Amino acid sequence: MSDLQAAPIYLVLALLATFVGYWLANKIVEVTPRKFAKAVRPYLFIGPVLVLVGFTLLYPTFETVRFSFMNADSTEYVGLENYGKLFGDPQFLTTLSNTLLWVAIVPAVTVVCGIGIATLTDKLGGRRETIFKAIIFMPMAISFIAASSIWKLTYSWNAGNLQVGMLNAIIQAFGGTPFDFLQNDTFALNSLLLMVVVIWANVGFSMTLISAAIKGVPEETIEAGALDGATGWQSFYRIVLPQIRATAVSVFITVLIGVMKIFDVIWGMTGGNFHTNVLAVDFYLNYFVYLNTGKATAIVVLLMLAIVPVMIYQIRTYRKQEELR
Image (tube, rainbow, N blue to C red):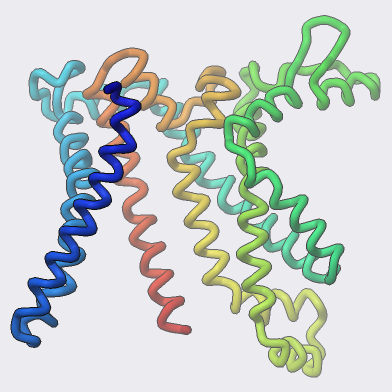
């Protein structure tokens, strides 16, 4: 029997074993004293899950940290040498600055666009609102690789007279000179164009959550502001915005975490070349292309150190929201 044929059988056996294991655990708890059973039951049922998470998440994390202190083929400890090489490499510093540029721009623009679009589409009402929101949300239905293919064609440049890229075709139609948008050394221009792809793909997600938050703002507070003479902008800025702040922060952090480990768009459009490299792409190149495990895992550790505080802040934000409810 081949591995492909055996896989469904193993899956069914694993499900049966899990069911039988939990059934037996429940039976054992039922025959024990009630006070003891009440204290033990939660740990008995969540225990296997914690073991599984520890094996699939915590163990690889510890191993990654350990490998970051070893040489390229993980046969010898070299201390902080990998980190020293990273921060002593001008190309890595460029990679780091590009990542920081992504972090500074993409989440903020995504949230601002989401607030603006949600506010405007909410005023349409009825069927028009549904249609416009569906169109704006549509990019969320495709992968970043598919989005990269679409936008790479949009940005494409041809050295000849015929331009197949939409932007260069428009420039040429108005008498301008076609321009190579992605393969250029203009400071951060190609990185900014790659950011457009991610913003375009995420703005529907931002709009949906923020629109739901805006609809949850009590009408009484808006009417009270209008009675006090507040203009439309003042009403939005001083009444609506403070009440949707928690949702906006949640969207910001979610997009921020995704941006910090962005890979698909850069790899699909430039491969990290032309000064567009970021940490996730640098990790891929070091691990799979240059076969330098030590340097690659050091990059991952730096990325984890940057993401963990953001995740902690996000968890605290969610808890505060739950407390308010």
